[in-house]
Length: 454
Image (tube, rainbow, N blue to C red):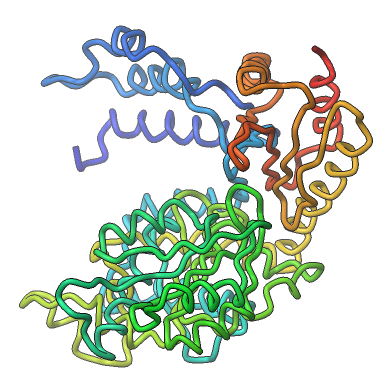
């Protein structure tokens, strides 16, 4: 299995040919994700067992049966959830990272890879206005980043004085905070102080009023701000929340998994005022910074605090902790083993330059603004709120939940677009999530015109 023989030679040619064809797709088609498990079991019967099979047969099963059962998130017609649009450069370098078995555990093993990743982290930290000492690591996604950062926040709160045994630390969150934050708090045995906002934008004043009404300000370990909610792309009052966190003596964590990439767009940079005060910050390059899955940048204002929480101790690990000048990504999140997932982004940024990234992000912002105008010009549609980033929420007058779901399924069946509905204040509505810089305006118009049908 580990030698290059005749079978391996043939496999190399076949797999690289498949990869080359996939990379050359322009645009990438959607395909369909759902299949009957029994149908897939029957199609793949006998492939997984004691005896191996010809690699072309296995690759053929993937290409003919499994790949078409995966919706391509990098298609310009993928307009649901938060899409992906990795550059060709990043995809190519991701292949290199995999083929070379490059990991990113410690400086001892991977100084070159880690140094390149740290250059990207420094670039992001500079965009956010974090101090020169800021740093962190790449993790798998926003959920992993939120968990790792809030674990540090909890330990910082503990160091200031323990809570009584019957009480738990709490974290202030808005009603539109990402679902992973609630999951993180359960895992960390902290509670959420949920602060509602009529306009879905958490502000510093709302936080201070809610804490004052609650009557237990000493229990607050952290405040979580969202820089671009997943459902609507709304940016919280970052400056106000930073001031509130300082007044409460709490950690400020900014979840910018989706929207944090807007820091690269000059037209909206002012909307992030206050992010420079964050104690920790997460942004997912596999979303709006055009990197492959899975890639999230986790940054700390004071990395030493994170290292004191996450650094793992074991006899066999002593060798990687010998020099304090060496940067070990394993010390800054809950993980130990990790792939060097920041390298594809580094390569693509070096190849294309940050100006190209800014232009690509601006294109999605422009498309969202144009789409809002198109919606407002149609009497059978209603815009729910003006887009702040690249998400557009709207309703089709007279439709109920079932109408949205049937229409969305039909769009996918016809390979027009993948555009599942969402929920807004208890109502099922339609939602565009733009990210791919090659999504055409003509497609948007065709989708909106399609909704005119009863």
